[in-house]
Length: 176
Length: 402
Image 1 (cartoon, chains in turn red, yellow):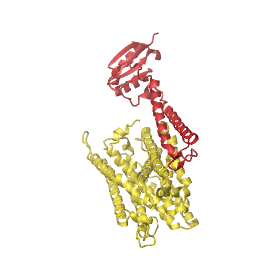
Image 2 (cartoon, helix red, strand yellow; image 1 turned 90 degrees about the vertical axis):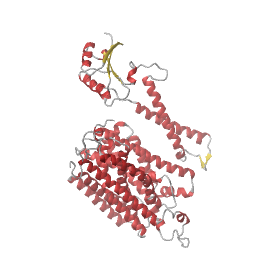
Image 3 (cartoon, chains in turn green, brown; image 1 turned 120 degrees about the vertical axis):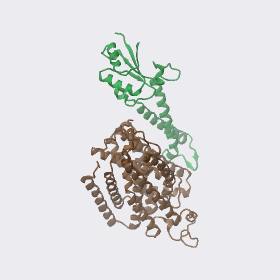
Image 4 (tube, chains in turn blue, orange; image 1 turned 180 degrees about the vertical axis):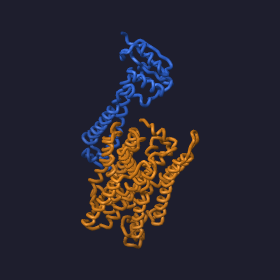
């Protein structure tokens, strides 16, 4: 059986949320939703997994902190000790307060950049990549649900019938 | 009203006070000299700590109106309840200041006789140079102005909030109390922006009279703000365990957790900024403050900083732990105690020098004040419904989802 994508198009986030609840209650698996802004409360309804980007950000941040401390230990203490403001550089711990601002900044820098790059890579939306949004209007005022026939044991016609029970604007079917 | 102070709560608070008194008496019996100065210093510590919890609650309530913040409406009554302790803690503060003026204590060295008189043997040129600001009439004028204006606003917000409950606002009509609360909120915050700093200079920073730091006011302010949010967080956890506060959901806990996290970072940032600039420039007149603390209070001083910074940073960073009482409760209790110790270390080194410390008297006084504070707060909670009625954003707050 060939896989088909069924798109249900809505013009209101709340209507889409209620429709999603309705469809999920009938056992339909919704692959994805496209919307111009995050819809509160939708994630658990369509069974989206929690994002792990926070964990990634934490690791990037800690990496930045470690690199900054390692770098400053090497530059300022190991390789070329300088006496700045009457504070000779003997050990890392003695001079730690002076290194904290840079450590903090570098930690933030690594966390922010790492998170942004991870996000863009994971979504495959780095600059120059082709957009995969099936309906450009979902960046404006439309809300679209994507349902795959291969995800569901129900037939295409039955899925459409169920969608028609909700306040849907339009249903569109594309071959995968 | 839906909340009644339970017998158990009363017993626990009275037990706290009794343990406090016992500890206090043990402390008195085993004290080795400087007892009177120590009592005065502790009165200032606890008076200031608990007074500023109330005043920071008032600030947060005002801020909610000014920023038209919706999520906090369901917890607003809890912030209002913590303001009820103001008269008692203000009394404790006034007692310390009167004691200073009457020379019953020696908390404020600049109040001593002769320090500003060039003929006297106690003359101190540095202190005399500050006499334009640090003189008794001006100090008393400021103190009375702070207390009077702050308490007027606290009273006003509480009274109007209760009045609002009795309004009958039809759908589509604007709510006059809400509109006026915004204006009063703006006025209060404008006043508080200056006085939160200057009160910290007057009451706390002038203990170490040779030293000054322009950052000190914000450091004190961030400390009081987090203490107030912690108290409300603990109240929410307590009331929810009784099955009350049904309107307060996970998301409200999450938001309070975020505030605890954020203000902890603000506090740590200010603590460190003040320390690092002084450490780096290493000017004798500035480092005195830190030398006093590092010589005699190192464990407490550095320890509270590390706890107050690292504990919320690592424990409350994740979204799940900010919603989970298992994490929130211990963190809130530890932070509350450590922020009290922070105030203790603001006061003790300048008043007790090498002889101060965290002893039975300190713990006893803290428990007595804490017991009274809880008693007043719960009493105030039982006097009004836990949820404001007619607040235009109440519905939005009830359906908060983060």
